[in-house]
Structures are given as C-alpha cells and as structure tokens.
Length: 73
Image (tube, rainbow, N blue to C red; front, side, top):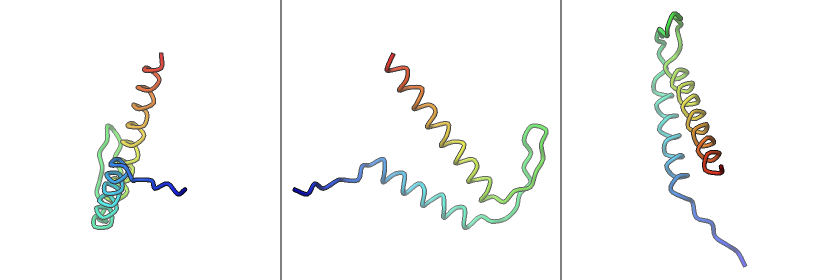
C-alpha cells in the first residue's frame, strides 16, 4: 500500500522564506561599507544578507538543541 506524505506548515514557511531571501539577494547587489565594533569592511548587500541569515539559522538551531537537552533532563 502506498502512503502519501503531506508537506507540513513549517516546510512550506521555510520554502517561502528561502525564496523571499533569494529574491532579495538577487535584487540587492550594490556594495555597502559595514562598521562593526572596530572593524570596517565593504561587502555586497546580498553577501551581508546571506551571512546574517546563516548566523540567525545557526542561533535558532542552537536554541532548539539546548531546549531539547533541557527537556530530557
């Protein structure tokens, strides 16, 4: 018997968010000067957006891991 799998709401939201992020990155290719603490550097807006999204995703994942670990205790 063949089972059908449904796509969950989280997957749909993630795909929509990823598509919006890609569209934003394609449309914003100009370079900007970034000042962070005592560092100054020039990056493209799309690269800054990608790095920020990756850092945010890692932080979100890390919070989830910590919560799961704390529930297991």
